[in-house]
Length: 225
Image 1 (cartoon, rainbow, N blue to C red):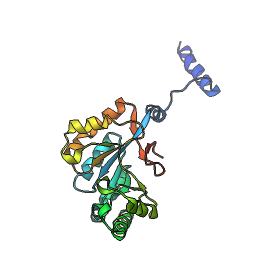
Image 2 (cartoon, helix red, strand yellow; image 1 turned 120 degrees about the horizontal axis):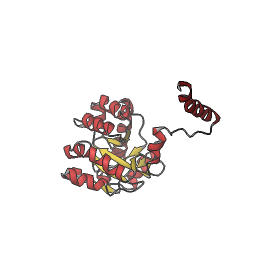
Image 3 (tube, rainbow, N blue to C red; image 1 turned 90 degrees about the vertical axis):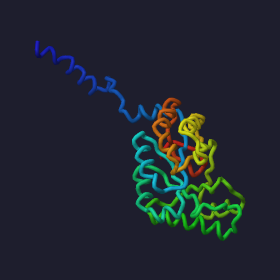
Image 4 (cartoon, rainbow, N blue to C red; image 1 turned 120 degrees about the vertical axis):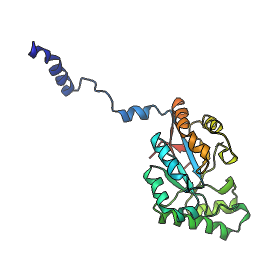
């Protein structure tokens, strides 16, 4: 009886060796198959006092995001820039001091962008390829300087209103409006945004959407490369 009990196992092994037995797929491809689309989660104005908590929550719930850092804060908190990269986030340029760039001279716009490129690179965040103008304000001068530094301008399709004291419920609802390829504006500093992360992950999963990277070619969210 003992030998016969092993016959099915031996037969299975033989079939597997012959390539005729279907072996369960690995978890990773199954997870990828669950993504019917990708969205861009973005967090402006860091890094700062809330960055570590935000990163820990994003990692815990399997989310990746683009962090549009201000140069002044990247220079002051290089360890947090490195932490963003270590957590699997992408780092973008959000100017040095967050001015209204459309009201500035070309020289000032150039300084705001170039100093931030340098500050982020010096902090270990790599050389950004994405730029978000403060307040979403742009014009021909801003676009010319972006082009000079090889930057793609990234605005948003959905505004979470977290900068305007939106509730956690409202932030989660805003994420729920995202469709494939779209980008949402959020910020590094609001407590309600950090509190929303678990439900953001749940909301996206329910829609079959995954957090993606923002393509420097199109400015749209795509599968992480």
